Image (cartoon, rainbow, N blue to C red):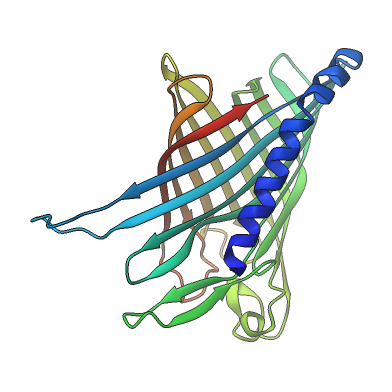
Length: 291
């Protein structure tokens, strides 16, 4: 029951977004410096087998993703903000419900125009999750490997960006601070995510790169790429943190979509609970409401 609460919470936010759409549009007419848009996506996937010679496991999954943009532009100044909230659960016979998505991402880029496509910038990014994460052994016994604010990452710093459009931008910060929070006592005691055992934070100083590229593969089919890199100058700069997401959106009609997502994370500071390369995949059909 507890695992369903974040999904219900996100659903309430989604419905609130629906009810406020008119207000947002009315406000935009009065103040053209702000552009607010986003989408709410509910994905459902299911598979079942009966006397199937090749074998298979009955399963079902439900995912809710809220993706909002709050962009400001006036004169030479711009301020782009993106909020992504995602939570999902999957159920396999004999294993029960387990989460397959859990993320809260806030991204902010303040820019001052330097040339046609170039900006002086200040960049900030925050990432965490809503609920506890577990690993499972062959007997279905679970071990805690993550929790809300364990980890949470805050990265920020000055830099410069190449921004051709809202669908193509690259920001580089050569002087970026990165703070890792591990607010769970058991994970902190184990030195999870690179913190000193017993400590709840880790400070790093290095370089950060953030890139976004979205384009159309065909009519009603778009492909989105998000890349984040971080190198710590102070310790082992060659061990680069990498987070890459690829999302495919296929529009069936005004509301129905088929979405596929792949996320790859390489974190040199991850504990032994994690593999060298973390992989998350999501695929399903559902309803997407855009505004």
